[in-house]
Length: 314
Image 1 (cartoon, rainbow, N blue to C red):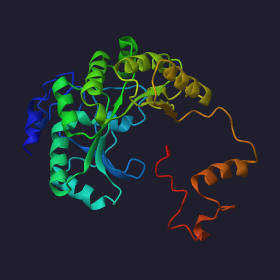
Image 2: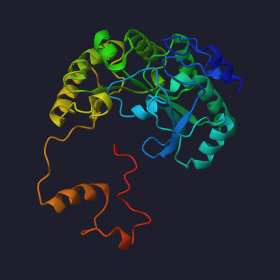
Image 3: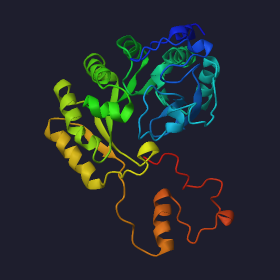
Image 4: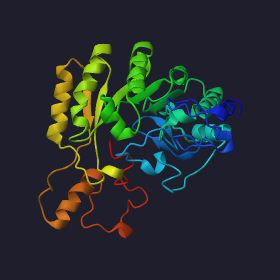
């Protein structure tokens, strides 16, 4: 618990609230003691992933807003878990190909003292295990240094380049994020997994090229990933990007010098052809179910259904 004493006056992010989270005070992130939403074993990332509650942004398009806006969203999750307990759980559930423990959210860096203690517990028992952190980049320079010190894989999201757009989307300024992106790229390039941006038609689609130019000036080899927006939260009724837009943005990014750009996720604009049942069957076949017609109660694979889509981005 020695690390958690630092939460008695929390200044981990650029809001620098100074809240005594150990005594129930809440700053902008609304977090008190570090709390866990859930954990999972990610086969795609070869990682034991810990999703933490709370965030210092209020992104109007957040696809995990019940987690990021906890407790205001009034969904309830796992709660506080002792670092040693979480470390033992992670080690027990890791498979031979698991190479790291990762922290996401919400925004995990608002809980950095807790993460440091979990990481120490894990590495004391599992030498050589890596550490991944996915962040919005709004931490202080001192916090960023600590994040770099414990991480082997960092996913860094730049929501927007222009300050007015960033503030409208997240409720926070972009300057600290861009500052930290540059520091990370110049002092810990080997730890960068990706820089990424969510593509929102009519909003961030015009920010992507500016972000790409910003990255290219620092290091054009940094992997840049464009994530297709899916309608959610306050932007529930805003359309997502089509495949043509995503492809075009990738080419624009390559045009300013980036060498490793890709996208994932787009908003379908057409319904597949076929009858009602055939349209549904097309999606099932993609997920691994080849039974037609379906009868799950009689299926010999019901205890190991291949259509259990663990990670839809695979």
